[in-house]
Image 1 (cartoon, rainbow, N blue to C red):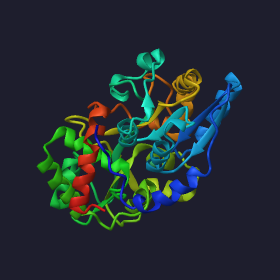
Image 2: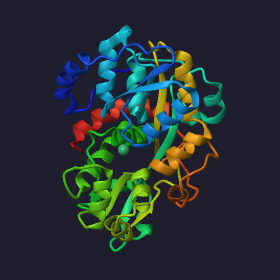
Image 3: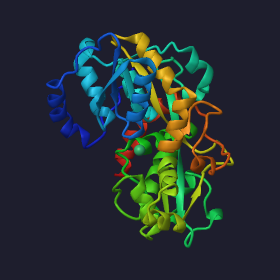
Length: 348
Ligand SMILES: [Fe+2]
């Protein structure tokens, strides 16, 4: 079993939050109800749950926590008394943490096996992606030519000194990106890469992915590493300021000439001690229905996990791209090592 470290900064607050959660228990799901523990932070999820209830009559009780690490700590503390039927989160690093803590049980969904490509499901059938997102580059059109860009590896080159923007390496999105490099290269190479990227940052990491895009538009940095759905959201925004931001920048999918652009997932799983396993599976199958796949893409601008499901126009406009199809389970296995390397290299 791989023990994944709780991300830095979280450790100090986890104990306090844990104490809080322990005293706000959710009862076991009754017949006709399911309990969903989720760290997804998107408005669309409420509408999806309402659609599930009106279709099936099954009530969805949600425990929503921003940080997956907190949710996992809570499930560990609750043990066999854990009332969760479904566990949902973003990023394979978090799914791997739940898997390593033995909090999940086999999905057993013929629909997931049929509809979700193998690279987007756990090899051991403990979770499935419901959607995915690409980690791409956004650059300032006045300062960077598309020919200047090529791969994630190239971002460690000194030519980018003082020009890169990224959120903190505390964030699982960057940890999984580094883990994907560990799946492709040896550890010494990846350590040099992390040091190179850290040395090229235009400022100390701060804010989320959208803040990095705004930073590129306003000239704080020239290139940002961000998730595709933040880009698509700004592209689809009706806000004049967002439109101005997107006029200044363009998008680049790295590594198109080798393994493809790194992707990550939003995932769902059945909790190990679920009381309503049948309804939990029915809920996850519903997440993979065309109806919900389309909602995830049109409303949250993610790529649908089910091949051929309808996509948001902004996502379709990215065009056909080559994605890194290294098994996400394999990438998840490299996450602890990636976190250690990032800690050591000072990409904070
Ligand atoms: Fe996000």
